[in-house]
Length: 337
Image 1 (cartoon, rainbow, N blue to C red):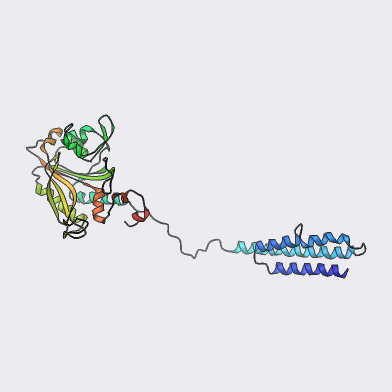
Image 2: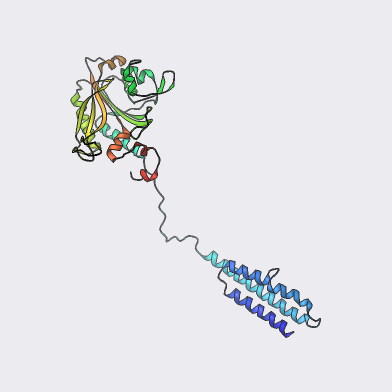
């Protein structure tokens, strides 16, 4: 009998000590299972009392029940203490500094387009936009690209229907504007354009900005002055430009416009292939043949036009080696600008 009571006391003492030193809810649950579970030590002990002599069972049973009640009560109090500590802990430390959310910014293409348009707006040109799906007439014929003329081969075109196409340049807006507006006309035309090109310097979809000035007494000197002012504002104040003879169906005379290399300043390097110059845009005096499509008198007015790829302008300004970087959506690239 003494051995049974001693065993009960030992189990009670060990359980209470374990509960007293418990540090977490998981450990407390393990103690409950070990002593009070269906196969726990207290439960097994209670079941074994049936094997004792009849006269010893009452005393042993009372001792076992007392131990079970004390262990259960201790477990309950420990669990309540743990829960109270969890609730009392602050869910939010208001003294901690806040987490600043990541902010986005404009993509390099619209950023560059806005900057270019802003420069020409300060020079007196109004911003005008037009449709991206155009007719053959506005995209080619009214711009002095006769049907089946070899000049059309310069622009590989994406047709979407009978005499409907994705515009190859923003020049159709020049014709549409002159049809509705009497001289003087001072406009800059930004927008998306499409050609069947795809390499490291060309994209099937690209962004273009064209300018048109038609007024009395406009000369090639005015064209050079406007483009010099633009290059100085967009690249740097000391940027030099040069005009090279070229051909465009809608201008005569026509000129390619180069800028001094943005990397070497015109001394010659790998970027400019040793020439000291980088091609920027095409330009020229408006061919008088265009005035016939819009009812202007070529004896009274003259004008100039120019066009540049926004993508190329961004590549030159920021030293990009591949136009595809602008369209891949790689945040590692976009975050640099």
